Image (cartoon, rainbow, N blue to C red; front, side, top):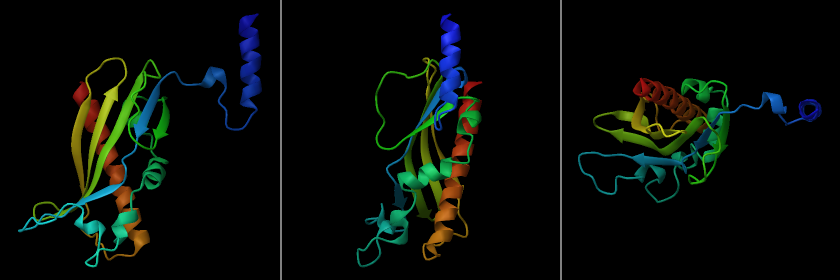
Amino acid sequence: MRSLWIAACSAALSLVPGTVALAQAPACRVDVWLADGLETNSDGAVRIDAHNRALRDRDGHPSMLAGMLTPAAQRSALTGMDLPGLLGQAGSLMVVHDGPVDNVAVPAPCGGSLMIQHIVFSHNQLSRTALQGVFVWRPYGGARPFMTLVSTPLPHFTVDADPVSADSALRGALVRNLEQFAGYAVAARR
C-alpha cells in the first residue's frame, strides 16, 4: 500500500514544472562551489604591485577584466557541461553554490564537492597570457581529496579586445580548465 502511495505522489509531482519525480531523483550529488571572481597576476622583470594590477587601469578605474568571470558568469559557463560525468559521477545531480564553501554535513551518500578556489588571469614572461584555476575535488564517503592548478594558454587574448570576445574567451578557458582538472582528478583515483 505504501509503495502505491509513493508511486502516486511521484506521478503527481512529475506533472508540476520544476520538480523531479521521486523515483527519478538521483541518489548522488556533485556540489560545485564558485570562486568569488577573477583575480589577476602580471609578473614582469620588476615585481611591484603586480597582483591584481590588470583589474585597474593607469588611473585606478576598473578595467574590462574587473567584471569578467563573476559567479554568475561561472554558473553560465557550467551550463553546457556534464561536470558530474567528467568527474566519474555520471547521473549525479549537480548543485551550484555561490559564495564560500559551506561546511555542512555530507548531503549525499555518493558524489563529491568541487571547489573553484581561484581563477587567475596570468600575464608573465614564462606562461605569457593564460587563465589558471586552482580546483579541489573532495569525494563524499571519505576518499582522499585532490587539488591542483590547471592553466589554459590564451595566446591571442588582449585586454583591449571587445568585451564580448574577451568574456567568451575567458569562459571557454574556464571550461577547458575544468575539463582538464576533471581528467586529472579521475586519473588520480586509479
